Length: 320
Ligand SMILES: NC(=O)CC[C@H](N)C(=O)O
Image (cartoon, rainbow, N blue to C red; front, side):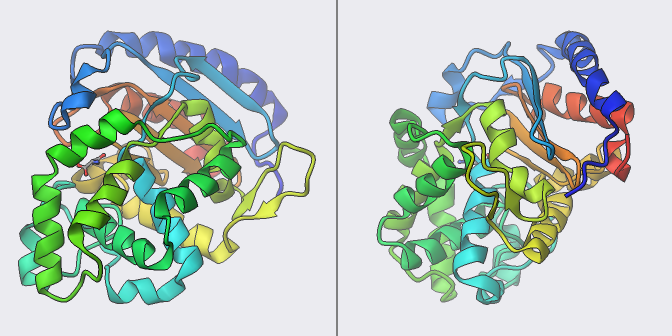
């Protein structure tokens, strides 16, 4: 895969990232750390990191890019990719691929749409994906962790048991959605078991640097760049990588997907831990993290940083 970004622009990246990091500090205090999962409320708010990985293998980072954070809904991306790899197009019988225009944890559409969630990136859709994976894998958390450990080259990568427990103890709305979908016949396994898997999945932790690396296959026609000397791996079919990017662009930021597309114009996936990962196909990946969220549950500094980055690099239209 050819790197579309000229060397001169790549060499300008460190200064661009430093400037964005400095400018973003003014936004601290504008958002709020997620508190509906009690353990997340304890995360110190004034943290901010950016990591960029280019398809030529070069990496750049600034700020708290090597601090692990709770991926939360960003894991919906990896769970969806695993489902696409393991069950394929069959999954579209149980979940749609249209933007919901509603909050990530909304359940209003489920009744009129007969228990079929709009897309795999809202909570209801992610629960169906976890249900599909729970049927497919006897030890789902290890199947998912195994994939993530390979993509990050970090055998220690794991979920935070305290955050998983904290979410599980307060997961009343997600549980309600799972039972509601079961009443429509769109849930196979015991909702309690699926929720255990879902909460562990959401509590997976990694840093911006690791997240940029783990999503490289989406910028690189489905190919993961191996850093251990082994040949690059076709982690996902190239056509599927393109489809995942389309879904991220239209559904990756819940009811702010239109605003993100307008401001940033790249496929993204956000999470209430304050992380956002963006894909610039053919160029590279960008992971940002700052825990303070806007009213729709997306990182304030993270969105600002991505917007500034595309303004300064032109990556949203495939050029520097
Ligand atoms: N938007 C998010 O990151 C939500 C994830 C969270 N675990 C939930 O289910 O509510």
